[in-house]
Amino acid sequence: MAPASPEQFKDAVRQAWDESASGWNHQTPAIHNWLAAPTAALLGAARIGLGMRVLDVAAGAGDQTLAIAHRVGEGGRVLATDISPAILQFASENAHEAGLAQVQTRVCDAEDLALDETGFDAAVCRLGLMLCPNPLGALRQMHRVLRPGGHAAVLVFSEPQRNPCLGILMTTACRHAGLGPRDPFTPGGLLSLGKPGLLEDYFQQAGFTGVATERIYAPFQLPSARDYLHFVRTSASPIVQILNHLNPQAREAAWEDMEEQLEVFQLPDGGWEGPNELLLVHGMQPVG
Image 1: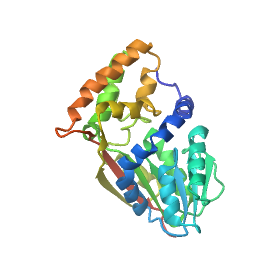
Image 2 (image 1 turned 180 degrees about the vertical axis):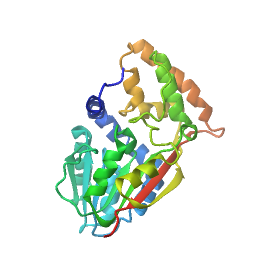
Image 3 (image 1 turned 60 degrees about the vertical axis):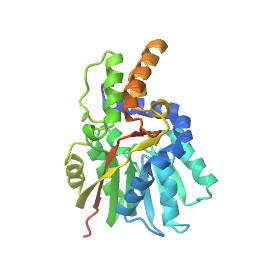
Image 4 (image 1 turned 135 degrees about the horizontal axis):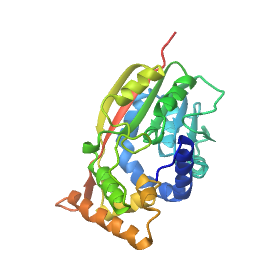
């Protein structure tokens, strides 16, 4: 049963990410390969450059945080925030190991950043906004801390039909867990912001101008469907949470069912390529 309130939902999300932080961080190379081009587009849309102050919302283990830090240089600053203290610790350690002293971290709820400081030149969120039960509230927080003329940019998954792997995972997990079909656009879900026009409308309601959207095809390329499921199982995905209450045998049966269905994306010449499409939405804090 889903949590009864946004607070309970966030507590469950925080706990899931805390428990999976190490696994997600271990998957950084695969995540980086998957999202390198979309991340470059995200940072470009936010107009990030040397010397800037940038807010990274729902930063996770900090793969994109490090990319931002390289763009702003030693004279810039990156503040990485996340609801999970455990995964944010990995972001801090990864920045330290990379010698990027311009990175700072702070545990924050995206919908209530609790930041007194404002005047950020840019704010970004990579594949995190759709997990917020109130994404409009999170966008309003990003808008609040930006300087006039500052830019915000967000990456989320697009429509369900353009992300069939996620649909297979969710439908199969719900069936094995004895749950009815879920509305993919329910707030807090992986595909919740994929409805055409929805995120643009939220940007405008939050006060951004010049709002624009780009579609980015971002296939997940791995040796096999089993490797993809290993990635899913070691992350704090909603799929893991749905199956958690099943006994081990029933849980394994669900994963085996998913693997069999996902093998449809095996390439004839070897390798596996799972289709994914992302939406990049960006806008500006008005001047004056």
